[in-house]
Image (cartoon, rainbow, N blue to C red):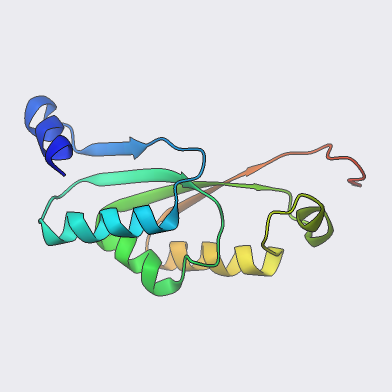
Length: 121
């Protein structure tokens, strides 16, 4: 928190993107709680995995703390391929998670790819 406050004071910038391949949800929730508790007003974003942990309540907590956008590695929108990739989620679960983010006012970006072995049109 002290480093965030120092950067804001030094630069006047209040927008942060925390870089991690997939930020741990517990760390994001803890950061959100500390930002709110210390009344630190910033906008921020981070990369995530689409995990079941992101409930509607937790997405609202993130939004309340200034979290404005997520980027997540979905890779494919196929349950068969998600299972082969061992992503640990289904298309339906990801849809519910993204809906929770959207309802909280958080923009959602999903990384997708094509050409995974055995993928069809």
